[in-house]
Image 1 (tube, rainbow, N blue to C red):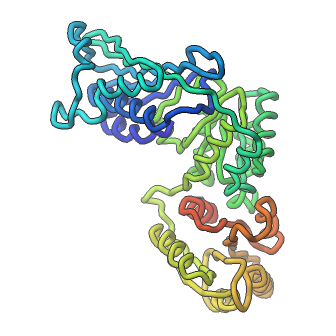
Image 2: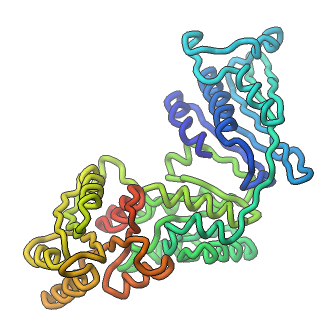
Image 3: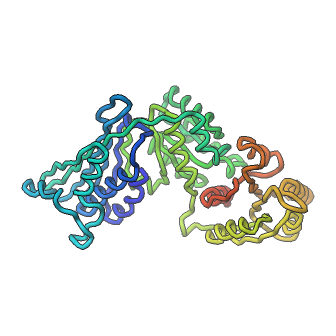
Length: 420
């Protein structure tokens, strides 16, 4: 899926549909050489896009056999190009395409075939001249497994994040399994069974801090959810209830960043959500909003990093080095949002937040500025961080060391309601 997202740009430039078709028996976790597999897929799809002028390029993935903890997987890259003359097919694997021959790039079929052979498989071609070609290859991988502890460790940076799960296709067993997986990964999950329920949720005054990722089980529901302006820019994970026949064009248009499918396995859910949680919910250029942000942070490195990230997004940042200065700046200036380190000299972030909330109450205007905590890994346990922040009057938190995608997506949740 990650490889196809990269190649989708080239396909889109040629107005081709790049489609990913993976069968439900395809495993979530394998033990093998991902770099070689990625190289072969990239080369074959890249050439298919190059020699296809209209229509589509499809990657089809299926499990052919399983024995002794090992699987034989078959991949097929097909394109609606001109095809290859039958008497030329045998010559393909003797030619190493270079960038100065026909403009082709990538490994070339001879090297791709060798890499596939090293992975215990083979590569071959079926083609009908004038109609298109199919490039098949097989590989053998061991089946992997992941314990609950390992999955939780991998999602540790995202513990406490909020997931909206929308299942519009009634299936109690699957919805129960998904909610259990989210609970096992220590994520906060909100469950809705219709787009109408989702719409009702967006009327909550606390909506901006509700969701980091939306899981949806149908493309038609995604279209309707994207019509809800407040949710338009949140990353989407597809839970495919049937064979995932996924158009990368639709993924680009609808903000779909990953997927998983039944049977619900912890590793599959973890992998899909990790990808989504690392993907910032970015606004299109024409709808960029500039916020006035107060950054209270005593560490110079963190000051520079956060400021650089925020200023690239056109936000205006004022920096102070302790909580006392943050309170003073808030009292005499107008800000849209505050990023508050919880451990600073003179006055810490929790105390400063309480003072700011007191000032807001004294003003009597009913205004409440969003405050996002910056919390190092040593502060509290991972599970309790967000709860501690909320109890202290804050609205969200960003773990340190600061990750670019996490900071961006968290700040984006507090954009004005008509855009966020």
